Length: 162
Ligand SMILES: C[S@@+](CC[C@H](N)C(=O)[O-])C[C@H]1O[C@@H](n2cnc3c(N)ncnc32)[C@H](O)[C@@H]1O
Image 1: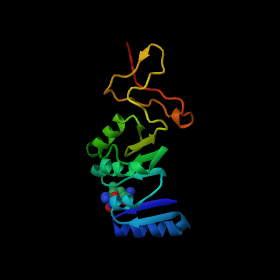
Image 2: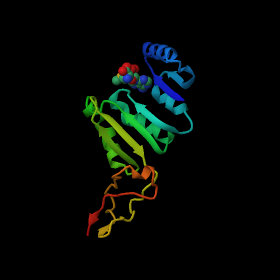
Image 3: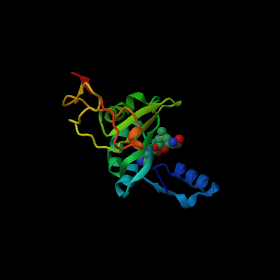
Image 4: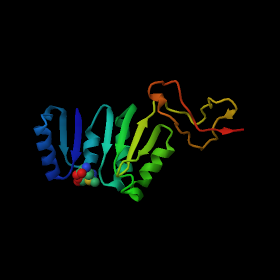
């Protein structure tokens, strides 16, 4: 099931018409209104979330969405290039949080592709590479690969040589 939310009535009507024409009405649940209010009423977890509201609200909305994500959930966000300044707080938040693996896909408008890790990393996690030491407190740990998706026991962290 896809949950869609949009405050513009004309866009909602167009979406309904397109979905009906495609024969997919049974699979799309459109909530006309404010996305923040919609998200506040949602329960459970979502496999994928696509964010394309006004760019300066991405981070705020994402923080409301976080409780609906499960390990392996994917979040896509449009306009990372075309609204670069407005989305910067969102990008920084994802880059700095070790729970997320994130990269900007080089499509025309720039699409942020983010995965919630299977592992909740402790800040003092031991580094798996010989000769390396745990990251210093305050240094954000970063997932380097998406291999955690299929191998939850594997994680690469940024650390430093002694
Ligand atoms: C950049 S447009 C993209 C929409 C769509 N992809 C399109 O091409 O028409 C942003 C859309 O987000 C909607 N929007 C912005 N803030 C919203 C909010 N808080 N709740 C619901 N919709 C919102 C606007 O009405 C607008 O249609």
